Each structure stands twice: as structure tokens, then as C-alpha cells.
Amino acid sequence: MRFRSSAKSFPHFQGTLQTRINQKAEWCYKLPSNVSLEVGALLEPTGVALHAVRRAQLPQGATVLVFGAGAVGLLCAAVLKLRGAACVVIADIDEGRVSFAVENRFADRAFVVPMKRGSTTEEGLEIAKETAKAIGEVEGKQGGAIGEVDAAFECTGVPACVHSSIFVSAFADERGSRVFC
Amino acid sequence: MTVPLGAAALREVDLRGVFRYANTYPESIELVARKDPDGPDFEKLVTHRFKLEDSEKAFQLAGKTKDEQGKLVIKVVIEAQES
Image 1 (cartoon, one colour):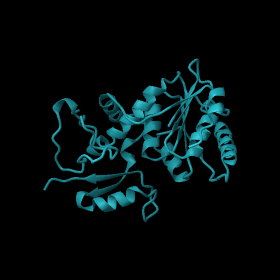
Image 2: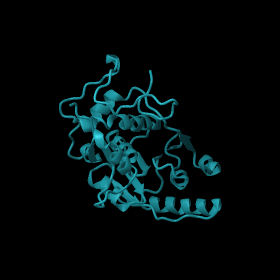
Image 3: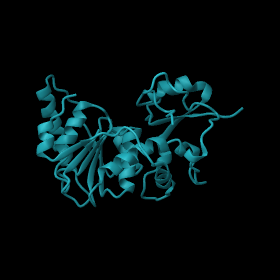
Image 4: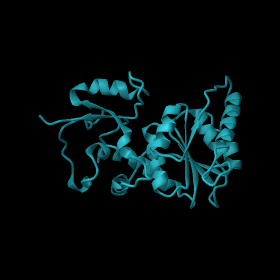
């Protein structure tokens, strides 16, 4: 099997910008009539989100954090909500994006990440701790601050967000807590 | 990337990577096919549409966070119409 949607392999394989593609029937899935072709086109990144959520093996009623409110972050948040996370907090530097996420029911809570950069690794880690602390102060669904989260899904690739994801996660259950990068 | 591994260990945080997927299509279809008024509105993710011949513009826009009107850019779709 060769994967059409990745530029990872070189030479590149012909992609999906074609009107017709021959595909093995065993790898075809029929869209129900109430799913548009546009939403059908989102199924590939949704698969990555679902794979991440499966790997999380979340405890019941989990509180989770999603860093990044672009397409990948939004899809992770959506799958988390539909797969039983009790409270999904989404964080991004762009207020418009996190508002979009909550307004369209991808996430339960929004957090706008303050733009602050450290000039040294140590300073950066301190800022990441501050961000994690501020996220912990987001009000949960039962009222009161969420404190720590059971799992964090890092969908930005920004080192500072990976750091904050670690600092905001702790002791979810007997298997500990998890951060996805 | 620097990773505060000590902090992760003390908090029992496992770092797990995600790069691919397997056996996700049937369940993903089931998730997006739900029309739950309290559930996420997947249709809203597609914010911009282009024709195949305008693919270059589509890719340029996909690299931005907002369009010229200041509207959010989330998912840009290219529609390939058969002629």
C-alpha cells in the first residue's frame, strides 16, 4: 500500500488532486447520504485524531486539554467530546480560533495563550509553567478550577506548548497522565 | 526540542507520539454522521473552497490563519469538478 497524502516519501507519489482515482475496493468506505463530500474529505485528519484518542485510553469523565485550534486541534477536540471526555479545554494564541471552537461545540472551554517568549531555555520553561497554571484556573463544568488535566493533545508543534502540556497534566489514573505530540 | 523529562516523570506523564492511524475510517464516518445538536458542527470546518485550476491560491490561503476579509481560515477545500 502506498499513501497518497504524504510528502514524507521521496520521490513523491501522485497525490489526491485528481478528478478520478483508482482505488482497491477493500480500501473504500461508503459515505452515508447525510455526510457531504466536504466532510468526507475531513475523514483522513479525523482518523489521526481518533487514533490519538484511542491511544489515550482516557479514564471516565476525563478533563483534557487541546493545544492549537487549527483543523487538527479542532478535530481532536471534537473526537474527544464524542468519545466521552467530560470537559475539553482548547488553547490557542488566537482568540478568534478558540471562540470558534466553543461556539461550534468542538470544545467546552476556551483559553487564550498569552504571547510571551523567554530568551533562555530556563525562562521559556518558567513561562510554560505560568501558562499551565493559568490553564489550571479555567473553570470546569462542575464549577471550580480544573486544576490539572488527565491528558493533553499538543497540536501546534511549538516547544512551549509541549512544555505547558507536561506541566498541566498529572496523575490521571493508575496509568498516570499522557501528553500527545 | 528541549523536553522537561524530570517534570514529566514526577507527574507520571507519558509522552506519546501520534503520526498515523489504522482502522479508523468506519468509526470516523460514524462520528461525523451524527447530527447531534450538542455535538461539534463538522460542516463549519470548511471555511474556503477553490476550483482545481485555482489550486495555487488555495495552497497560499491554507498557509494563512485569516483571509483578506479577516475571516478565519480553517480548512481549505479544492473541488475537482469533472468536465
